[in-house]
Length: 127
Image (cartoon, rainbow, N blue to C red):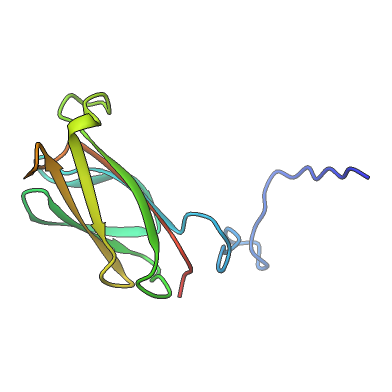
């Protein structure tokens, strides 16, 4: 038997916010930022503060901590033209060192570089 559920909004029990996705398989953090000039998030979920540690070295803090340091990340670093088109030579390495933040190293042609577009998602369990 096939079922269908049609809703406009799913909210928490109090009806004041979104349903928490703890212990489920969905991105717990995502962000996209520009790290040229004054670094700034363009869009994010569960990401609070972007810190510039130097050329090509950024730290993104989480609003809600991850359960441990064994979370997985996926991401891409894009080029200097305002698009993802020249991302072939841009790479990023994410280091899950803390439960409350992630450090990213962005490189271009093997040198640390401030990429114009950097995006990342974090999967795992929230604390």
